[in-house]
Length: 263
Length: 266
Image (spheres, rainbow over the protein chains, first blue to last red):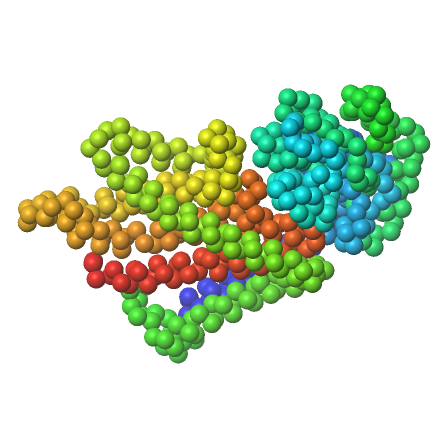
């Protein structure tokens, strides 16, 4: 009998545990999710604290809304699930507002525009994106990015390497295992600068896209607040200041090469 | 409730030696599963989540191909790890000292470092230096060497559990070293190492998911890709759990069967 009772009490205990853990709302803190692996937008400073353009943007937003801000570091492809299950309130993680994503979450007005371009091996016979859609070509992408989605949809003849880390994708190109890595302009430029002997950057974007702040569907009040903040922040020169602080070198280089800058 | 009225729910003794009658086993299994289903269905019913199975169903071919790749990689590295593990365990007992210490260093290095680092270093440094570009081959070998270190310790423990006196007795009745291993050591070792070996094989299958970091298109990576395309996390990962169970359950069943086959030895 004691054994049967023991089983019963364990079952009840587990049920209680589950019911106690699920509803966790009501906190006024604004929880912002981002992957701190994309400098200078999302990164950590020397002492491990979150830093970067997106972090400053989140703090300014919190100030404007009068809410304390908590930054949560979440892997990029876990951000939307975390938002949908209520673990975070906003995504500010250099996320492109695509129509596929817009089916499961809402986006603010765009705050930045950039484009997909190519980091190719020094001797790879690739001059543009069209050269990649050939049998025998290998394309590296980072999992869950718009480059990944683009390659899966448009580069059907090439073989695709799906990698977790940006650094691994760059290494694939450096070692000649992949012909090209599809990523955004700024990162491609930086990766090329770090590996000038083994890579080339083809910075002309073949698909332009814009970044926006993600939030749960059906939250119109928050969306209006965020959009108002973004408009005010742009008007008061906030984005220019962030660009000067974090992206000075890129800003110069892109102006010299004649590509429009991001903000 | 008295124990006699519910005696169908109880074994006659603790431990795992008696034959449980078929009816009692059915009742026990059913009620255990029922309890589990109760907890899980409650947990899922509390989850506020928009299910979207259709989007995931469109990518079913990725699940199938990923599962087959995982099956192939696991089977190949499982066989290779058994050979490597046996060789390393025997080298531990070798009279030739460099070989003995090579075995020891191999086991300590592999067991003491993360598999993630081993995969990255083997693929981007070692294999690259030797000009091996096939990530599936390198991945399978890395897994085999990783599991081999654990298996060699399992086998070594099994061999050492056979008492010194038995080896002396075997020598005394004139058995050759081969005969000693074949008829005295091996049957006892088999029986003792099967449970930990089955556990090691199951974790080898699950560890193969780490190969996704060098873009081996296996089961876990494909499920993550489906998640990335559809933003349907639960719907992408629940089939993943079932797929891995379909690989690990046969292994533990085979191990149970072999355990009863070698039971005579004790």
